[in-house]
Length: 357
Image 1 (cartoon, rainbow, N blue to C red):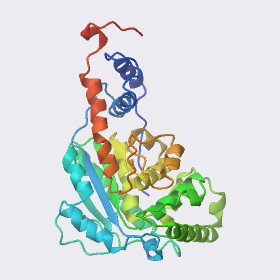
Image 2 (image 1 turned 45 degrees about the horizontal axis):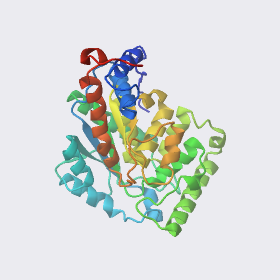
Image 3 (image 1 turned 90 degrees about the vertical axis):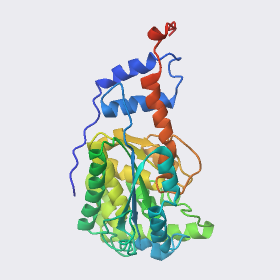
Image 4 (image 1 turned 135 degrees about the vertical axis):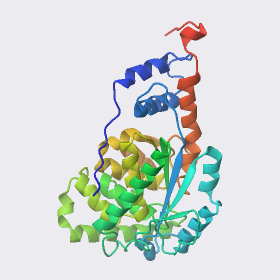
């Protein structure tokens, strides 16, 4: 597996940033989470005058073998149909990228359809969907590595263009299923608390999805009994979970997150699926957590519990569950406000206002 050398931000900047924030002409702490964001972004960039430059959004698409088990209300062909729609500018992700000035990259990691003739889709197809993890590992070690390397390479490309803030989204029917399994196996949360409606399952559908995923976990533990006693915090265990239950687009997202942290970029984390990717990324390289801004708490069961495990909370709560990275894009103006606050507000001394605390 590709090695990433991620270092935590320089803590020597913390008192400098905190002092600047506290001396802006406002009551101490009165800007709430904007102050937290300004501090985090300043630490990531190592400056008390942070900026957000040339934001990019990576959308990775792929199909999942587990979808064959009817764990999603949406049919498999929705993946390729939406990828074509994105390439023509007609998706929710397109609209938000236009609104907030993000350059959008649409990457085919493993869609079960030939997208080679569609301009705007970057072809990085590993296979036409993963294997069905009810019966076998979703990916080989080589496939996992290829996906992570592709995600990392896309981030490098953005960084070379001057980008310092990256958002990541996904398109893959059935991908709440691997996300639920990752959450269960990496955090110990009971599986039934990790499984939700996805694209709109009813109660019977959710129950069926749970039974399929439980059988998949049982298969994994029966074939690899040593994993029953494995340390769920270890990088080796996370690698195995990624290979056994991953999606191509999710592995690419993990690689993208790790590379972005390596380059000291701000990472906008979307909803349930991308939070699962960040959770797994933190098990591979814990320092990646410093670079993550969790943008919203989605409407998928288990998302809040996963955020709690990561000891964080989303900036927004809009009951979103579309995916594509749309929640992360919606939150971007809040980061812009935080950066403008620290850079543009006057301080007490220059404004000739009495500092009373």
